Image (cartoon, rainbow, N blue to C red; front, side, top):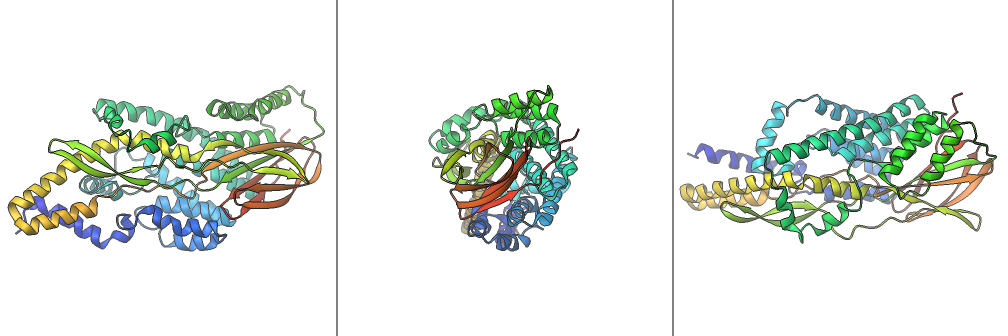
Amino acid sequence: MLQPWFRLPLLLMVTLLTGCATSSLFNPYPWQAEQWKSALASDQPDAAITRLNRRTRGADKLLYLQERGRAAQIAGDLTRSIEDFRDVIRLYDNQDEQARIRASGAGSGIAALMVNDNAIPYRGQDYERIMVHGLQALNYWQTGDFDAAAVEFRRVTLEQQVAEQRREREIGDALADGEPVAAVSDFGSELAGLNSAAASVRSSIQNAYFYYLAGVFREATGDYNNALVDYKRAWEVNPDISLLPADIARVEARMNRRHVSDQGLVVIAYEQGFVPPREEVSLPIPTIHGYFAIAFPTYGGDLVGPVPLRIQQGDTELGRSEVATAVSGMAARALREAVPGMLARQTLRAAAKYEAQKRANDDLGLFGAFATQVYNLVSESADLRSWLTLPAYAQVARLELPPGPQALRLSGSGGSATVEIPVTRGGITLVRVIDTGSRLHITVMPTLEEQQ
């Protein structure tokens, strides 16, 4: 009869072997995501939605709903996208209501200690949660529900503030618990790509792209006070956005009724490519039993850089977009900030696995040794889950053009297209461009009316 201490590893091993299709252990998440990313890149967004439909009911439904909401948005199925993002927001809100991990989640935590982080249902990243609200705001804007869009833009700001406070508490708790923060420096070569990518942004939470679009939304509706606040927040997060000084000065002039222009503004929001997937690397973890090699998530050092959107009218180039938010950098920084806690869990896990194998060798002979070796092999895989249909870079451009319909030629990494844009005197027109690598998905957003 098997000893009680050995039943858990065997039970977990059987569970892994029978449930691997959804556990991301034998089918790493980036491999799964290639199916719908390829469909989006090959201009078959409906196929991407179909591939995601059957995956939105499991333990990782939050992740798959985020993916499907984004895919549906690209496909132009705004009803589907709005509903998916509503469900995602409810899931995040439910997490907030939990003072502690649910009883069912506690079981997952035990499994994760013996297996790996893939055993924990996906709970999302702070930057992903903020992106959900920003993308939902654009959904509502496109459908003409401006009140709902205003609510979501407010939640973008609120979620960033709450996430910053939560991050400060987590860092404090990690230090208080003695998590091995200093140990991160021991893996300079293995985590060089991650460190480089994380250093490309100042924060994994603050999103200048949605601050900027919130400013555009509020300026267009005459809410100049809040528009000014949003533009200044965007500039504080990313002072390299060259448009912002003129935007701030223009809104200040509008507030004082000194802004007079015969032109209209065209703002272009350009979402380029897809965020890169996480990669797996082997790290030597020190334990009381010696060094153990463990699988760990990271990002490579060869991340694709931003490609600006070129804007032309006839043979004249009017401008190029510039990066407001490097979402790929935010993803890397979020992972880098999680490394200390992950190392602490991996150290405990490695020690527990060593003890299990030692006892199996002593008590169960060859069968025990073989079973625990298979179990350790199956369970040792890095958690590579993250929202992979988000854009790698969110960029912005602004033009001043004469009133009337204006034909612009837009050229990005995914091709070129000509779009006719209605320009109103003193007004603002937002043009959204999503570049999936083979085509530019272009939407001229409904015109907002200034509130007097």
